[in-house]
Image 1: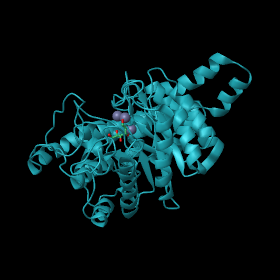
Image 2: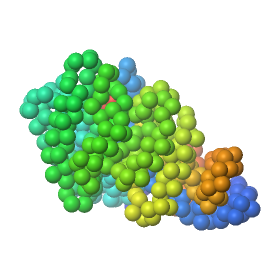
Image 3: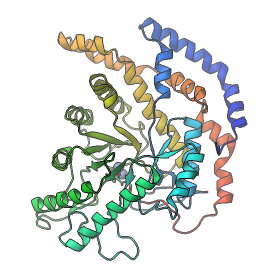
Image 4: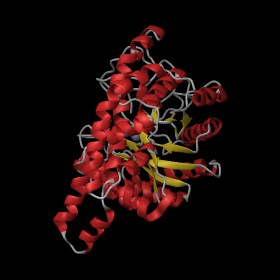
Length: 431
Ligand code: AOS
Ligand code: ZN
Ligand code: ZN
Ligand code: ZN
């Protein structure tokens, strides 16, 4: 394995913290045992958790107003993989990378696949990009891509998605996520129904190009860049389109793509109930598509989402396997640090949801005993499972404290030397 952080350094870091961790773990184990829960079982479960990294997340994202590049940013997809490998080495929770084309288009897909394998990584869903024009592109997406009035722009957008499938296939991916910014800024600009009809026509062509074992995920988003009417604005539209397209089409929920205060966990429950929950883009949000670090604003919501996922997993067993990805933009932090801590925040919600006593909860619901039902959730949410997360990492070969270990290793300073800043470094301000 091509480890980017010296394994001796990780071992040394862990050795210093192991004693304290053992004590915290024993205390937590004792508390859970009094609740009838076995900490070992939960730690083993924590070790199975995985969330994919967004290739675009390892560069400084910026906002639509400005971008302040950091030192040692990855300049190409190979360097992005190196950074993703660091995150996975220290967290052991991010073995897959979700690539975005054409941003990450490799000149040699098999070489990129080999690099990923050497780094202990593989490729999750690939993402198409028809929300911005690329240099030399024949037809603009200014007035839409998959929904454009002009057949030529639509065909170009469809062809790009099919290229993404081909590329993804060469890389070992099993699915495509389609997010389009198509919509209108003015009432009257676009025929609302006509745009969705064109979207469906375009998506049908993409769907036909899917290999047998592939899926396509439709990502909805309330607004931005279209500020009056977005074609795929909500889960209802996404669900209707996924249903119309067929069994390989599912819905992808980006937590930031809803109006403030939307009950996202209920959307998750609905999509799971009807077999259309494809996956997630995890991030956090205060106002809109803020792409803040997962769990940084509303960790209770994240927990409630995982509580629904735990319910679905219990009902449906191994067949229930939504894809988990992060989709964040890091403007004021080192992206590697943010992604490490975000992966562990999502893992935290997963572990907390496993602490919910589902039998007890069901009994309270059955007897309409409301307060204890609410308390059953709160008790799990309030449990500090940090020692379980740290133990899971240590046992899987990661770092007890990933951010501290990363800082000790001086990876960013070394990257700053190896990757001198250049204008227009890879990454995007649009996430
Ligand atoms: C855009 O708002 C979406 O979240 C998409 O997932 C997008 O492809 C990604 O954020 C990269 O820009
Ligand atoms: Zn997203
Ligand atoms: Zn975003
Ligand atoms: Zn978004």
